[in-house]
Length: 488
Image (cartoon, rainbow, N blue to C red; front, side, top):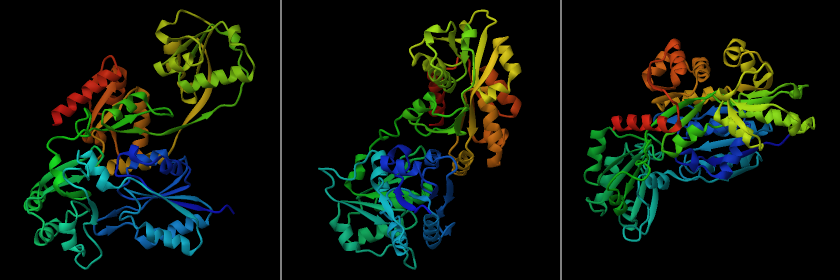
C-alpha cells in the first residue's frame, strides 16, 4: 500500500491570492481535504476532481468536529495511503492547534509537514490600511488570544507585561471578551485613549472595520453589533487609519459575484472583476475530456467553425498527429467567440468571427459533445454543415459543495450570466444546493449578456435587473460600479 502523507497548511486570512505557492501546490494534489470554517471556500475549487472534502467548521459554542475527531481522521486517511491536506485559516501555528495534530501523527508514525500561511493579525490589519509596526508608532508587536479554555473563556495572561511592554497588540477572536480585555489593559497601565481598530472578515469583500479607543470601543462594538471573526488591534498604529484602505477603495470592493460558466478554465472577464476588487465564484466547475483521434477529411471543407478554444486545440492536435500540412487545407477558420479566435491565431492562422462567413455548402463545425446534441440550434446558426465532437465538458460535482458553502455565508449578491447556456447549466446545478431561480434572485441582482440570455433567464424564473445590449467587459464593469455606488 502507498504510504500516506499529511500537509498541515495555512490558507491565509481570506483572500485566496494570499495562500502560499507551496500550500496551493499541496492542495491541488490532495486526495482528502479537511478544512475549517474560516477557509475561503473558493480555495476548494482548486482541488483535483474527485477529492474528498471534509468540513471541520467550528462556530462559537458549537463544534461540528471536535479536535480529537479531526486528529483521528487525519491518521485514518493517511494510513489508507492518501495524500491529506489539513487546511486552516491564517497560519496553522497561530491558534490553529497544529501542535496537537502533529503530535497525533507522530504517535502513529505518519509523515507530515507544516506549510505556514499569512496570519490574520497581519493580513487583516494590512488590508485595513494599518501596518502592525511603524517607525514612529510601534516597534513591537504581539499576538494574543482573545479567549482561551479557562472556565470563563477570558484569557489568562500577564496583563501587566502586555499592557505596558508591547506597542501593538493583536487580539484574535476577542470580540465577546472585549470589555474584559479593555478593562484589564487600562487597569494595568495602558492609556484609555489608546487607539483601537477592529477588522471583521479581513481581506475579503465582507471586510468591515470599527475604530475607537480602549475607553469607548466595547460600547461601540455593542452598538454596531460587531462580531467575530475579527481581529482587535490595540496601539498607536491604529490611528493611521483615517480613511478607507487601498483594499476598500477598489472599485468593486464588496461585490460577491456568481459568474456562470459552461467550460473549463477561468473567464478573462471574471479575472478582471477580481482585479477590480470583487469576490468572484465561477460556477459550476468543469473538466475537459478530449475525444480520441478520428478520421476527418479536413480537405473537404472551405469553412471550419470552432466553438471553443478546446476545439481549436483538438483540431491542431489532429493535424499534427496525422502529419497534415496546414498549407494544404483550403478552409477559412472562424471562431464562435473571441477566445476561440485568439486560440486560432495562437497557431499563426487567421481567425474570423462567424458573422463574417459567406455562403458555403462545405462547412464543418467542431465543438463539444453538448453542441452535438443541439442540432436545431446549430442549423439555425450555420445552415447545412457537418459536425465533429472534439471534447466533452464534464461538471465537477465538488463545485456544488463550494457553492453551498458560499451561499451559507451569504457571499452572493450578484449573478452574471454571459450566455443562455450558462443560465441553463447554473439552473440545473443549483438544485443540489436546494436553490431555485426565484430564491437566487432574492439573494442577488441578475445581469445578463444580451437579450437571448435575458429571455432564457426570465423563462426559467430569474428576475433579471440588467441586460447588456452590447456585452463587453467594460459595460459589465460600469454596471457593477453603479451598483456599488448605490449600495454605499
